[in-house]
Length: 480
Image (cartoon, rainbow, N blue to C red):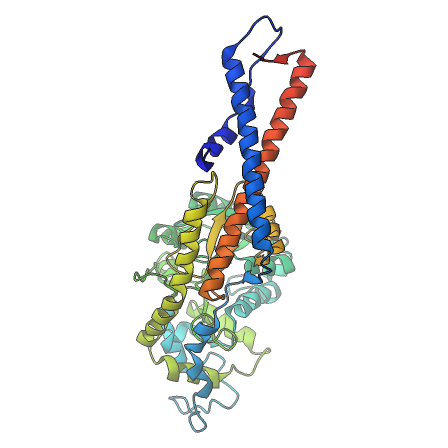
């Protein structure tokens, strides 16, 4: 019996097992069904035993593998090692004569803002270059809005009652953590291959003034790799919102992080919003964390002139200026937009084989398993694995016990609660290729075992319910 036929057996309903009220009314069809289900039970148990044996053998290897976070590998970090020697002992003046060793220049030096202008889709004067971590800028923008309100707010958000954000799911756990820490109610909306369900988004923002923001990862989204279509971005820019100070937190973390020869482009959210009379709607964020050095990069912000003025005003009591030496070294190293793209081609050469290895192993091991599927991203840092409903936590637990660390099941949803318990984020970027292959093999094995366990339990439960029903109704199963 093949795995494919096992899928059919499990999918068959035991309600078809025939029963009759007395033994003098034979039913050969009922007998055949009963025998088939008995055979199905033996086959499923056999598969479960086989998978358990394979799992035990894998576990006995004592591996320590990690697919939890989207971290660049050491090989990727080495691509930017030259940064550690830049800008040099005597190279500290910006193009306007600013001494980058000193205080000042909240917005960032002009050449750094110009360098990332195209990537952000904004004029250099609408760009802010900060210190490491765009997540810090996102966090601070939320906090500033609570304490001071946005430039369109009648009052600080903290004085407006309950505040809510739309959260496309599956999504990024650190976005959700910001909301959770500050008591922001999270409203999940489904995310498809071309972006969030816009019918639902438009309905919600038009009717609920407590909805002040929306998280968006518009390109190679974390974790699914979704790319927002031009039509979706147009609707986000044009939609009517009950809250006048509604903001889209446009986290374009993977703007240049391609995994194929195709450099996908998306519509410019800043231009679209301005065209529809909503210039202050988007807060655009990005960083060099996965371009140069993850722990020593630059955080980037772009928006309307009014939003830039608002953010810089919030910076005044917080800092006297960013690390301009780091900005200067990035300018010296990357040089221009072409330099950024050339570096990202080198990243792709490192990453693409790892993603392909995971996909090849999943294709070989899991293609035949019902209700198991995975994304095939064209960029970004993640593959999303969907397992049968109710199995994600079990897969993650099995993986951990076998030496494979995965992101916790549910992390892709607000409060860590995936209502279907199906979604698992796979991050193949950090380990070396051989470890990626081992981890993918192990994850596939955990999926097979968890699925077999669920199928065996389901079949046993159905047989028990059938027997209990027969006893209650005075029925007896068909016999020869």
